Image (tube, rainbow, N blue to C red; front, top):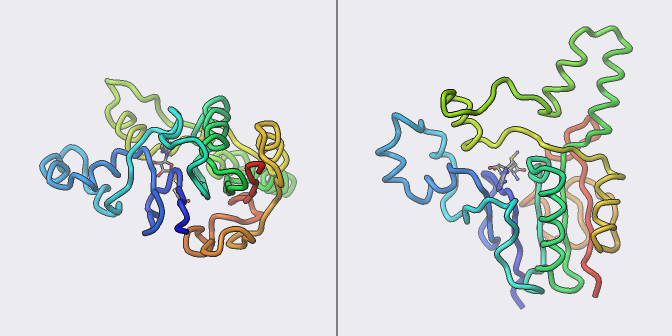
Length: 222
Ligand SMILES: C[S@@+](CC[C@H](N)C(=O)[O-])C[C@H]1O[C@@H](n2cnc3c(N)ncnc32)[C@H](O)[C@@H]1O
């Protein structure tokens, strides 16, 4: 039977055979290229690199899938772009839509790895340690989005670059367990017992102990 697999916050990694979902306006423009071409002086060319066929949806509003209908949910470097509360709401909804025994795999930037690097740089007397930590974790904003600051507004809607919360392995696993997932475990990058085509969907550079990212997997109870 054909697997129903969803990639949440897929970005440019929209693969055939997956339901690819992303909230970026660029995903919408890629599906409506004639409008994007007309608006090019306003919106630039960023949308051109985006694949067509992405379902555009703001995921903090929950998932548009029926209960017990999805075999696999994959999400990489996305849920840190949600507030803590939004992420919990989304993960609860993920538990709802997964079939019993279905798998979720979450990759997020690794707060612990980033913090360890920060302390190491600080201890070695690097005056840029704090700056590098904040840039690595995207826990900052250079400007406020407002109607009088169009550049920041555009960046807010188009890029979604800002992180609203971050996780280490323990907090991610704890969150999943609390919500009701089972078999919650750490995974190596591009390795999975449950996802045969993991190397296709997971970028090699998405997971790494230098703060780049950690991967956890869990299942919905049978
Ligand atoms: C850092 S990118 C990761 C893309 C891809 N998953 C990867 O690992 O390369 C984060 C993605 O999440 C999307 N995103 C951020 N906030 C979102 C939201 N509230 N709803 C839907 N998509 C969102 C962005 O548009 C962006 O494509």
